[in-house]
Length: 177
Image (tube, rainbow, N blue to C red):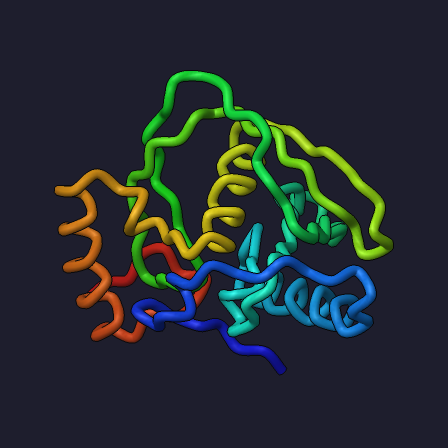
């Protein structure tokens, strides 16, 4: 079973290698990642968050009716961002117990390959647009700490230390100390 890599593990700040479409282990990895994402109440998970330095992401921002239909993205690239950046709190399975204000454009378009090597594009605003940007950041070794404004980053780092000391677990975006 995969486990979630937590900050400050240096794997989270490592640029990932492209996926090889002939790698048969990717289907199993994607299935395991989706399981970990759902188990921890996440809406996105990137391979480095489970210790695998491959450009693979699973996303499911539409879980309202209990349906589980993750989108598996190999070698995703953000090809467009639109709108004035909006600061909203983000959580991260690899940085449990806190949320951090991160300014991002509200709309993103992402090009990726599925597990069969077919090229796709997905676009969205709101949670999906933010999630696409957040997860592709992970593939480039960027966490929400690096995306935060300097003062917000300092506060987030302090809050994270307190959250870890209080026993924060992946999937939690706040912890009472």
